[in-house]
Length: 287
Image (cartoon, rainbow, N blue to C red; front, side, top):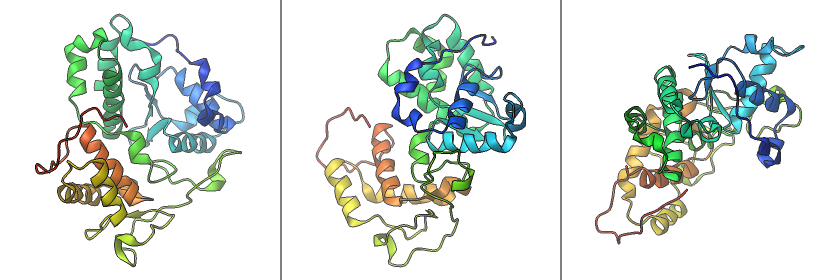
């Protein structure tokens, strides 16, 4: 079922984050929303050369630079290998889940996604909708139910440690006018920083190492916030996960912040290692 129209929210113009984007990034975002290859899962073909030809005077490099800015703000995720681009908030804002038969079209579109990362990010966004609006009739569809059980990952939480994107490392000269880079490069070194976990992380980002440990203030803060979590077990899982993460996915700017988000998400999604001797805590976390 091909899309013949796009639901573009006019209140984007009142959003501060959107207004902080450069003109090229804003233009690319709206162009992707009306692109003929965009499917009901919010995924379109990523071919910068072809996209550039839609607008006079634009090059493929211009498109890539605008995409880097959008990915830095978690608006989109680009998978160059599979030539797919994902619009993170598309399913939440398009309204297709409340329309007749479109949830089935969405499930078909999800099945066609090649990128493993995009598949996980899509499921996370769908689960967010399910949590906020569990009464939608679409959740009765067996194919939609099965998607909710698929592996999921929060695209915004993954990107927060890098600053400018997951796939891309952006330098200031690549950004559209008016945008500001907060990081200019990443490093893939496995060498522990001098002083262990108490030393400030490099502003360029780094990979984790086997002996890494969060600061004492971080563990104490988590103990107060989430006393039921077995932090020793969670830390082992956390380090193993990011040691195995390929490329930029294993590079973070602030490992303590990443660890805090890891523990919070482990509670939110029911994967946390629980300290049975800790006092019980109320349910209903909303991060």
